[in-house]
Image (cartoon, rainbow, N blue to C red; front, top):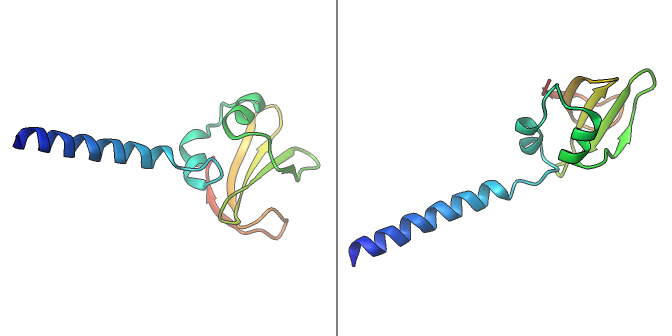
Amino acid sequence: MTRVVLLVFVLGLSFSYCNKKADVSKDTYEYFKPHLNSSMTYSQVVASFGEPDGDLGSGIHIYYYNLDDGTCIWIGFADRIIYARHMSNNTASGQLLHTLL
């Protein structure tokens, strides 16, 4: 009986942990960080993160995604990803928080 209770407890903890990892919103830095890589095409970026919220660029595309916490991800893109940055906001006065790529 003790083994059954212990097994149920361990399985419950495992499912709880898995569900917490799956709950990470796509609109968070924590989601972008492991899922974004420099070899992605524009189509792959859209498939992973959805359509960008806008484009700040004039010489190159600078696609941005507004995140749940009020910050943004900027992805500099020409025919490939040039850089990806976590910014304080989506304006020219935004401050760099993290460099993703």
